[in-house]
Length: 377
Ligand code: PLP
Ligand code: COI
Image 1 (cartoon, rainbow, N blue to C red):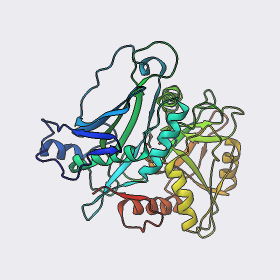
Image 2 (tube, rainbow, N blue to C red):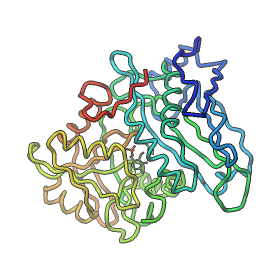
Image 3 (cartoon, helix red, strand yellow):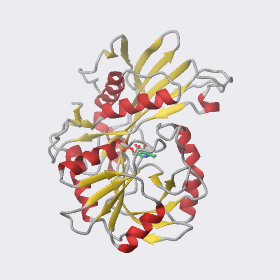
Image 4 (spheres, rainbow, N blue to C red):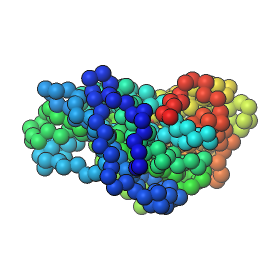
């Protein structure tokens, strides 16, 4: 980086000064261009990161925007033993006019604090969460790709850093934001995915941590995800942990089901927030977008059996997954021990209408009616 952006904030929030220590050896323009030409997902990282510390005595302190680099962590750090860790995922987009925006970062900040409370961690002032993301994007703005499905994926996270082996909430934490240029999570274009309904494992139960975005949920999902891959499927579909009957969500996405063959008279259904599934920001946005587009949207339970039966009868015409990383991805087939079924072989009309609408708002070609777009610069 030749020069620091002049409009970096001096503070992330009141009382939390941001120190800026530029990366002395950033990627060359050629190295960056090679990465941006084919970024894949989550494999390459930008030149900088934001790191903020918390301790019981000092609260949030020592905020730095610095070179992307490994942490030095005590082997007894609580996160390594008891997985006290939470994270978020959001994207920054480059508009055709060169401006950079992000999508609903306030909603991520809010969910981050919901996760923090569940994991007995300190909350971060939402303005500091957003300011940290913005500062990183400003410094690394040359890393924001400008293709239609491209973005800079931001990964804010927090972990327990106190070296202590007793089982209680840590007294020290680190908050960090890193950024990674991203293309499609499932490769390029709108390819449909196959899913495997896990009947051996559960992701979460009411009262557990399913509503929180904590690393432990994903650790617990990996064996089922590997089983899905062994079955030739892209993703696992979770059933509820109590009756093992109702569809909850996918490995890293929420699910929507489309009823009705007449595109002017369809209903979209998504599993209700049972207490054990992640309240996706894309899910929430699509419920609103459906209302804007005159599509009936309903939150209710749907069993795996009903899913299969409604596809067989033809009343359900499409299924799609949604999330920050995956945007909107059609689900073509579902495999389950109780019987496989095919939902479709090409992206459905409603899936594509909602997908185009959401991407349009994010990239600037569709009106932002709800103030979801946050301009970074
Ligand atoms: N469900 C899970 C388990 C996820 O990991 C994600 C991704 O963040 C989602 C749903 C979708 O959430 P969002 O739309 O906020 O990205
Ligand atoms: C996201 O969509 O931001 C996620 O966190 C999903 C993750 C599994 C990549």
